[in-house]
Length: 420
Image 1 (spheres, rainbow, N blue to C red):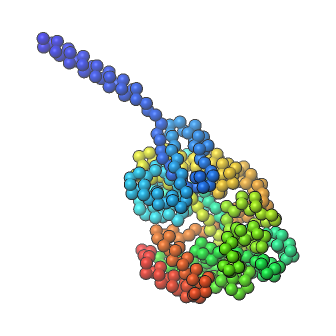
Image 2 (image 1 turned 90 degrees about the horizontal axis):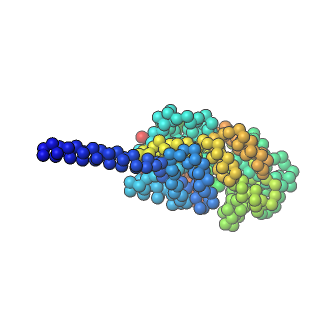
């Protein structure tokens, strides 16, 4: 009897092992599914990543991608909510302005090991865009797209004024001189438009040898001599020469509307304006490298791709963001959809890009890359921009002089933000 019981137990044990083996073998080892969150490709932009997702999944059969798209205005609040609610995506898009804050909060995965272990070639990427998502010599993100700023001008107004078109070596003085001649063409015609707000001021300051922070980024220097001179010059174009329209003269028109009306000679704006101007402008227009004063400087607006530090699928997420950042498929997709510039610089893609006109002088877009600057990489960037922006508005309205506005900005920044 004892032997029978032992035999039964052995049989049951063997059967359980067989069933366990069958169960383990029968379980599908299906693909890893990662979640990706983005604001660039969304219903507002009219661009979907579904086509690229299909290409990526064909190239990487072990990975599936779920894409969540939100409009820019809702995106960062929603993303922060997901971080707090333990529902963060495995990878996501971020802009340059929020990048440092996310890194400071420990939300971004260190990509150094992933880059070293992969065959990703960062040399194909514009190096300024790569640096934008590097903090303390550590790569926390890859560039997704970028847009730079140029001088856009109405060729027909220049012809009417009988003056030469802008060139890449123009300075502020050239802008002022040409702007005055164009302004004289008519009571409702203006020579130049550059909004006086934080981003334009920050860049103009750099063009005049100034800065928002001192060299080691340990203190604000907003009210420096160079910065005050810069703001005074910007204001003089409105209040003295009037080559730039006042708010009243704009009459509620936006910058693009003013340019498209045919009544504006020159506009400082970004490459993202090209599709609209190509479609709607009823006059010939072109571009040039943005003029500087003591030096040239033009900023760019960069979006990046990051992997969530707590994701359990970091390897798969890294492959996806690498595809979005550096693949030739993505670069061509951006070109075909007239989307923001791809950070990947494939020769054939660049050749196609420069041949799509207007503007004729597309090479100015790439010449400008030699003068790119980035906004201050500090955690409290948003507060910094808001404080300076409010004081610039006070100067534009005439409530404060340039010196008073920047003195007040300096005092408020020092009282509210520590750079330690």
